[in-house]
Structures are given as structure tokens and as C-alpha cells.
Length: 370
Image (cartoon, rainbow, N blue to C red; front, side):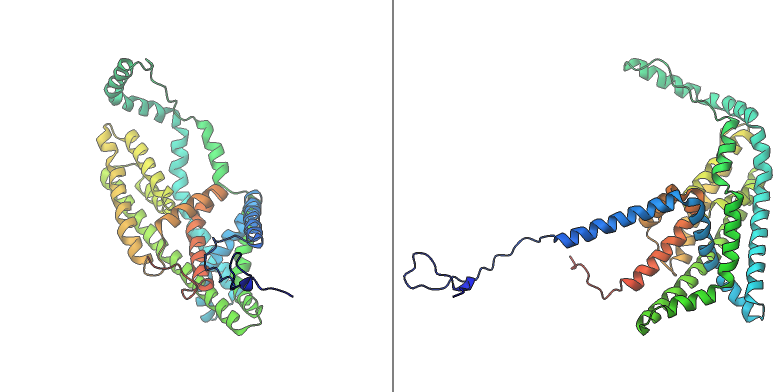
């Protein structure tokens, strides 16, 4: 006869009473299936990152074209409502954007090539300006000698012209990547409506179709608004930088303003790089350090106002981005794909947040409130 655990006899008890059930809580145990699932998910993530890293020449132009095409899709829809065929509208939009980008690049490239050819002369001028730090360095040397450190100071060599060519190769994509980007961009804009319909109709459930439609619409609207808003803000930053450079007597204020507008598309890194450029150009162009740093300090004030008041006020109303999430996304995509990855970090973060909001709604199980 089978005896249940609750009916087992207590040893030493004459009345043969059953053992009461135990109410002691057992510690949480991770099941083997859950561990295997986590391990497989981690391996899948590592494999995806490795593929994106080693196949950068293919995935970067394609992802760049898809993101840019999603941003420019509202413009193609606008032209289509004005009886312009979508394929023709896609070509016109790409030509217009390419013309604007080429103008900005030409505005920046002319002074950049001129300054790169004068690097030895500029290095000598910077070395002369560095004599103002001789007294602090001498005091530091005496302090090192007093505490028993080394007598000499490490010499920091100035950069040579050799770094220009590798830097241009790192920033500039190949001709095949350019061709893949433009072909994918035009075809994506021209066929975006059909792609949307195919992705929506791929689901048999009505709720899944509605959710996919909402996700696609929200991604298109948010990315389009992001591109338009950030472009207007960066143009304003470029104009303000050009005015500051002209007011402080900096050389080629138009080129510096265009460079500021272009670099401001890259969060955090772009403004810092522009501040360094203005500081170096100012130190070379002006006889005093105070005069040379005026434009850089004024640019720092402009970017502080833009980053802490203008951009959060405008973009924050549409989609709030956590500062830590922006920084981590910027670091990750810059490590993965370089400068273009830095440009894509914010749009990809916006897409991730939209997917999270729709796939993990607020009525899903949440942690208890403290």
C-alpha cells in the first residue's frame, strides 16, 4: 500500500498521528533549462556582434541606408502625394541630400587640406607658444627632484603628416561601400511602402499585425522627426560657431562653422573634437593664448546651451533618451563601426526603445515598488 508523505508516522509516537506538512520556503533554484536558455542567448548575442564586426563592409552600408531611408521616407511620401512617382522621388531626395553633404564636405575639405600641408610650420608655432608653460614645468621638475623622482620630463612628440592618410582611410569608406549604400538607399525609399505591407501581412494574427503597424509607423515618425530636428539644431550650432569665429577673428569662419555642424551629429565626441580643433587653430592664429582660446571657450558655451537646454527641450518631448544609454550606445557602436557607428548610435537607440515599449508593455510583470 502506498503511503503519502503527509501520512507517515512519527517515530516514538504511540498514537500514530500523521506528520504535518512543512511550510519552510525553499531557496530559489535556477533550472537547467533556464540556464541553457541564458547560455544560448548569450552565445547568439556574441555571434551576432562578431558577424557585425567582421562583416562591417556589408552590414554598415546596408544598416546606414535602412536608417537613412526610414528617416527620408516621409519626404518621399510627401512627394508622392504631390503626384511624383515614388521611384523618381527617391532619386530626387538622394540627389538633394548628396548635394548638401558634398557642399559641406567641400566647405570643410579646402581649409583642412591647406592646414594639413602646413603641419610642420604649425607644429613649430605651437612649440613656440608652449614656452609659456616653461615656468610651471620647471616648478614641476623641481618638485619631482625633491621627492626623488626622475630629473627629466618626458618629451611629447608633435604629430607628423604620416597620420593624415591612415585617418582618412579610417573615416572614408571604399567605393564599393558607397555604391552599396546609395543603391540600397534608393531601392529602400522606393519600395518602403511595399516592404511595410509585406512585414505587416507576414503575421496571421490581427493583433500582431496591428502591433507591427504601430511599431513601423512610430519608428518612421520618430526617426524622421529626429533627423529634421537634429539637422535644424546642428545648422544653428554651425551658424553660431561661424559667427563666433568671425567675431573673434578666426581664419575661415565658414569652414569652421560647417565642421561644427557636421561634427555635432555625433553625440559627445563631435563637440569635444570641435573644441580641440578651435583651440588648436586659435593658438596657431593668435599671438596670445587667451586670444587663441576665445573661440573655443565661446563654442563650449554654445554647445553647453544646446546640449542642456535646446536639444532636451525639443527632442525630449518626442522620445526621452537616458544619458547613460546614449553614452553606452555611442561607445558600443563607435567601437563596432567607427565614426559612422557613432552617427547611427542615437537612431538605433531610438529604434530599440520603440521596440521595447511595444514588445514589453507597461502592464507586463514589474518589480515591486520600494
